[in-house]
Amino acid sequence: MSETSGVGVDSSGGSARPVDLLLQAFRQGKPGAFDAIVRAHQGRVYAFCARMLSDREEALDIAQEVFLSAYRNLGGFREEASLSTWLLRIAANRCLNRIRQRTSLAAREVVFPEPAERDDPPFQPRAPEEGRPDRIAENREMANVLEKALGRIDPDSRWLLLLSDVEGFTYEEVAAMAGIPVGTVKSRLHRARMALRKILAPVV
Amino acid sequence: MDCERVRNLLSEFLDGSLPESGRSDVRAHLRECLPCRAVKEGLEETLRLLRGLPPVEAPPELLEGVRRRIAQEGSPATPLWKKLFLPAHIKIPLEAAAAVLLFLLVYGAQKEELQKPLPPPTAARTAAAPETEKAKEAGKPSEKKAREAPAPPRARAAKEAGPGDRPATREDAGTGTAARSGQPSLPVVPAQRVSTAGERIEPPPRQVLFGRDVTIEVDASSRPGLEDRIAAAALRLGGNVRVEPAKPGIAPEGTADIVHVRLPADSENPFLAELSKLGTLPEEGMSGRAGLAAPPPAEAVAYRVRIRVR
Image (tube, rainbow over all chains, first blue to last red; front, side):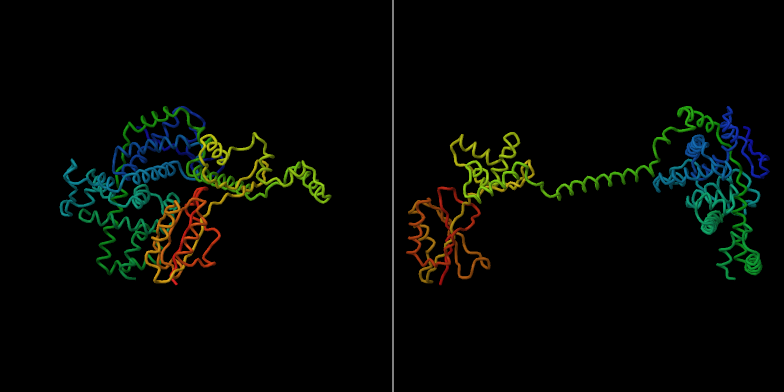
């Protein structure tokens, strides 16, 4: 799978602002341009949705909706933010809507099924002495543990955590995407990190 | 700087967004406070794990699904529906506001219509009226003018409305039925109406059916059995009687009971004569008429006889 960023630099106006070449190609009506956009961003969008929803099937559905919405609305996209930021903002809104649609009970069941109901073994954090955290953090099992722990964070804070600490957006960018003040982002993010730290404490 | 303050600043400290003065304070505290240093290290590790989450490969169905959905939609790059219809969050309040406005307009128009003064009389009537007055002044009213002038308003309105416009009234229906069946018609209480010419139609003089209110005064010694004596007198005259015990606190003071009597219309005077034999009929106790809840038919007369003990 080729995941080209498709980002160049706008040299015509002397500006350093990157120009999304794939977006340009799509606007010029070049065949396959939208496929290329999807390929370039699908991993990031899908990962975000999967971590927000803690459900791969739902994540696939929402990610498709995100690209469908982008296809409909790319004509009106004004490039005030990068295409990836725009797509993640759509994804965040869609995920939050989907989470709100679930009843709180159903949401908990999806994220944390009762031990008797679920197929996989219950979450048992490994004791610190079983291995150094820096050794296990890189492996898939640790990623799964972390993603499950993320699922226990309040969705309204979870997406800030994902945007800031996983996707690497600054406080200001997250505040712009969420439409809330930077101070609120900082405080909510700090609380979410501390909550996550508490959940992971037995492991890390 | 205390521990709580330091812990609240740890995120910003680790992100590097804390101002230099704050950074040095936090650093100094962490050098001395072991528990806060442990919290900082734990938070640091959590952030390291989050930032090190491995990339996720999207399943191939994602792109296929997007292609399929786009194909199902056709070419919605310039969606027509979006141009034709506003989004629901705008459309619904707009529609609600339009509905309220429409209601207010209709309501206001109807209210204005009701409050509008009645139109002046028709040209024919306005022309006729001065002529009538002139004729009256002259003391020689012509027969035709005389017929027009004193006509009761209802008849006048009926005349103006014309035979085609005149709605069939309950009274008409009642008299028609009565004429056909030969039975007495029910009493009619006509509602206030307005003719098609916009003129108010006054109700005709009402044939009011009342009874009489009579008070009979007796000594305490004559009181026992008085109802029976009144009833006997009424029955002798072909009437019927119902005795109603006086309601404490409602009936006038001294009134004991009320006797309701119905008599044939021609027995009115004999009954009063009988009553005057049984007791005194004070002048103030003889009302001309009394409205009754159930007025008698035309051929009967009703009395409400109040018994008062002196």
